[in-house]
Amino acid sequence: MSAHNLGPPARILAVADVFDALVSDRPYRAGMPIEQALAIIRSDAGSKLCPECAEQLVELAPSLAPARVAANQAIQPGSTVPASPSRTLVPA
Image (cartoon, rainbow, N blue to C red; front, side, top):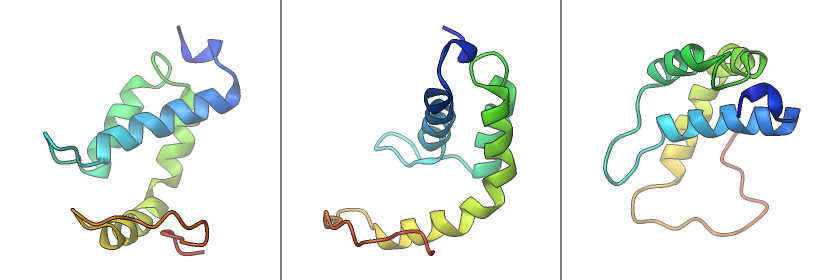
């Protein structure tokens, strides 16, 4: 299935999901640097991922770094995050 067979919300979610999977720490590996993940997103744009959605992520990437740092500081290994809708990890 190509990216163009999906509706716009699914295309956006696909790019976001791939990006998150690449940069997030896993029990078996550390998350990769944002620039490395963006290089993979760029290489998959047009074949596996929607090129327009991938380009939007690449353009927004500089604004993601501060939010990622805040999220990493808020969630430490072994801690739990309360299921509170008022909790915000990204500054407004």
